[in-house]
Image: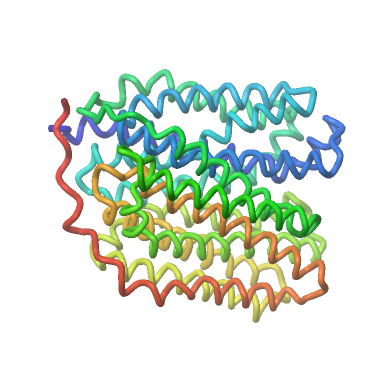
Length: 444
């Protein structure tokens, strides 16, 4: 039986990865103007660079999660860490657009770290909701730290260190992980459904590209959406006939409510995250000052992550989801009504991102993982992750379109709040998972 002592190093490894991967995913956004200048990127190349990591993450997440479910999370995590290190090093020393694009592609594999970590958390920790809360909270913290640290690191040293510092942390974790992570457990040796994986990857790639191209090239986006539908239908047909499908369609039936909730949450918070810096810049705030206004949100997320897991366990997952969604909407509505001075915006973001999103995210992942069952933990988490990524892409595009069209910030925040509370209607169909999590697994 896995003991408390043996799980502490494992949690340290997973926690370090959650923070670092979150940082690596968010670093390119504040650094994009700098990368454009140093690499001579035109706007189209900059746009592709900013989306490559997100698209790669969405494409590979279900495949990586399925491999972790079938072949073991420990081995999968070790492979992912070294891919991420290679991608970060390539991004750091790239002098041409194709090289940094390849680096971001390899870094995009890091999107699979969170669902794979959930697979290991379910195997290692008896109190799975708390473990999920810690990891999701730390991932959020890492995202905030990436935004905060990218500029100062580039200014104080060079752009290389924006990527090298997290890469060193991931490399250290990769060296320690074989000792810190117990295992191996007995795993299924099934044949991977590569035709289904390719079709799902193509469907997700065309969908994400359509979302990002919609404002500039609507006709191209429509063509890509048509391809998405075709690939999606082909994927469903293949999965129905596959002996060992990549994603059991029964799993989708059990997690669709949680996935829609994750998508709505992603759309709401990403729209808010896009609008707030624009609003603060209107007060004359610099990039560093904007980071300082958002820093308290990161500190609150450190505390909320683990506490939200405890709250979900004691109050019930549905209650935690409802509380998180309501807080997200309340903070956004606060900013919609009061944004005459920067501190009001900071308070609203504290409630929205610090309290609301952290609580809702933990409860949503917990609900999905418990509904799917132990053998599909990674796929269930990946399904929520994909939905959240798609929602985030939609949220940013809608917010940008509103500002471009001359709409007020107030309208954007109100719409984000409405989207946040929309999933409340789905919560009645979500079962409390407290009795679905089994005891810690015995090692094989």
